[in-house]
Length: 265
Image (tube, rainbow, N blue to C red):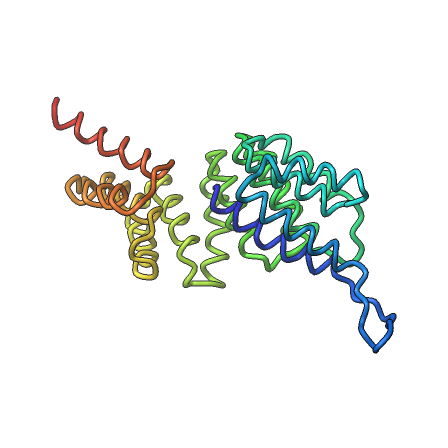
């Protein structure tokens, strides 16, 4: 989910910059086009870049910018900084409030904010709220496949795997080479006990992205469910070999320990 949040932040940053930069038709001396909001756009871009590397400093800087009239761009940077600081619920509330503000003719901006708030709620352990916000976002942008992938994750977090499959089936139908969607669908198929379709999807995903960490972890889980313990072990060892320390390596270690404990009995 963290990767989805980073993806949403990147996409939404571009949308915000596009909304901020409104070139003026006024001209100064020498025919130079004046862009009075371009300074704000540069400040926003700098704040967002800082939020990724030093969220605490970005948060303090954005608070100051907000007091000086930074508006929604400053508030968005504050929220993203809070995400980086691990304050997911507070960030989610701010992002949801931003999405609720009137934005004439900008359904993409509202949908992006709802999607980002939903990802934060999901990380905060509130997938039901995330699913509700993503449904709002999809109504605004029904062709946005990323939003449907995110909603499938929220449904999976609620144990609603068939609803998750409904979204993922639509995504794969429209984008059959979307490796992430294939991996998530493989997981959903495994959860409902349809291992043949789960295997088919994860194989297709790894053909597209051979060293995808999530794909290898999922294939190991499918292989374990199929009784192929040695093959599952090989996948999880590969995850440890190529991944940096984090949730994926922890999951791989836990799964390796589970089969090692079984062997010792």
